[in-house]
Image (cartoon, rainbow, N blue to C red; front, top):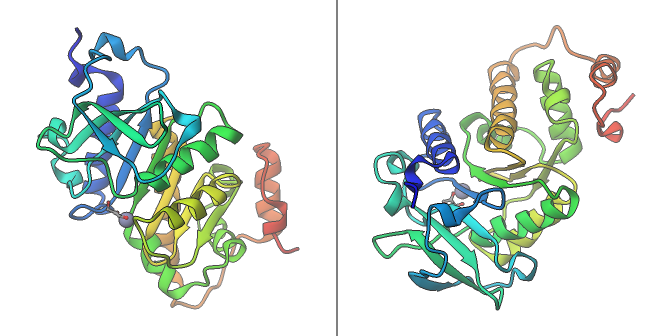
Length: 271
Ligand code: 2HA
Ligand code: ZN
């Protein structure tokens, strides 16, 4: 058996969690990540018949039966993932009933997956419907994105448009825009369903006054989306109280999107 801690997916997970912590996005137990391990031969690393224990999920994920996920643990701190992956992370397989997760590795101290697992799995199902190469769902509390939620409307067209104007490359990085949910109770199937609905249309979903969800084919894509939103939100928070003298207008946004040949939300531009 190969050492699982040396696997590409584990290294990616550990480095994402560590970077997110150091960027100040994921205080205490804030944030969670799930990684669909479809592209890896897990039998090189794990005995796939060795189910450590079964964990009820509290919802059904029929289309994910048999799929394996590397996922962060509930109550665990991103700060500690690197020094102790086996307690802070787990690998689960969705059992035949679609309602139980079979623990194959990790959560060594008796832990379980993130409380946001419903939102993660429902989002995986939604993204896979529109992009069968999607592998990552990532939730975080980036500081400026969150700050912006208190001083900007939570209308997704307006929110996206403001961010597109904050850095020239935003419309090229997230031409599909950002879905926005109002404040909702987290950890529930309801917020999971609402997030998944948005994920059919967007790779990014803001949870009003809570944080953000990002998705992607790779860890870099999901991370890069959130990172770009957070950078733009930082520019907004640094400038929104000052007189605006210059701006990137809708004609220029359109010019960018067309030059870089991205499929952008034309209805999010007003002119
Ligand atoms: O897992 O961020 O939304 C901690 C959270 C819950
Ligand atoms: Zn959160």
